[in-house]
Image (cartoon, rainbow, N blue to C red; front, side, top):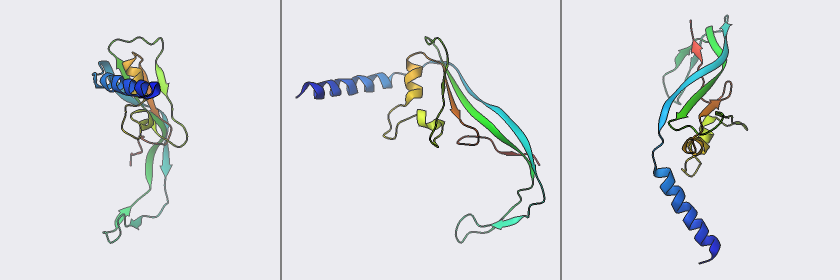
Length: 137
């Protein structure tokens, strides 16, 4: 077996062992940043069929909505070692879930930095991903 193959197997085995260790948090939560209220009026109520062959539903877009806010989850490790908290800010049309896991199921950057002792704030940019569109009336 080549040295490269041995190194790769060793690295994968140690990463799997490390990932199995629990992450100890002193706190976690979420919050919204920014936002404004928007009033929509004078728009017609429409019958919308969400599923082919389904029963139409009446959709009334009129009302007051909260828009343009950003959703942030935070994770604070029990034994903090990082000098400053990290903000994971996605790009390219993605969402904050990008940092939770990889497409093949491995842990993402969020858990990596938590295991290293960094406080992590994982964001979903304004009007993308996990955001709150609240109709008030």
